[in-house]
Amino acid sequence: MKYIRFFVFSAITLLVVVTGVTLLLPSHVRVSRAANLYAGADSVLNEVSDLSKWKNWYPGFDSLELKDAETREGKVVKATVKNIQLQVTVATDTLVTVLMKKGEQPVSNNWKLIRYANSDSLTVQNYMDFDFKWYPWERFSGLLLDRSYGRVMEEGLKRLKERTQ
Image 1 (tube, rainbow, N blue to C red):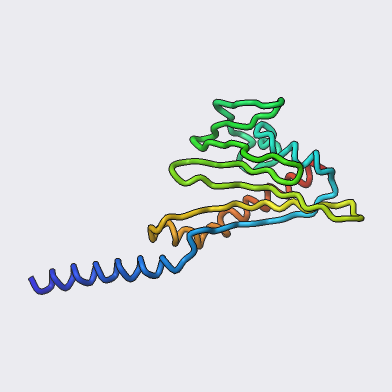
Image 2: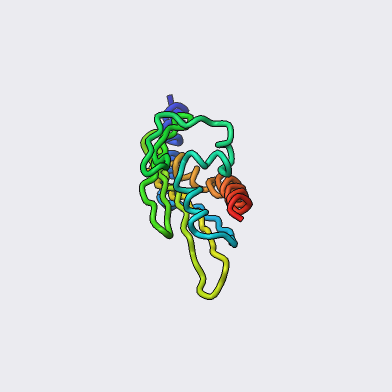
């Protein structure tokens, strides 16, 4: 009985300590990559704001099929891919935001165009915003996001650059 009580007390203490440590981790994580392009802003925004064109440059989308697609002004702005709901929520001349939802927590995937005066190039910044609850496994997973999503974002920007130049 003495050992069982010790084990239960130790398990509860460990759980409280792990939860306390994870509360010190951020609940909001942003993964960001950028690339310089020598293309017109319109060509970049057309590729990003039309979900049907993602198969040409977004890694992993080349063999996927868009389901339940909704079009607006000739562009696919809402679709489902492998149980992930995609929706273009913002499409301006400098920013495109696609909300990606699978489960409860949506992920905001953004492409921002930064223009430079007296220059023929522009910078495309791709960043993803993740929000986590207080759960320890969610907060710890935030530490690994840059490594896992960063490579995909870099490859996507590379393909986008090749496609728009």
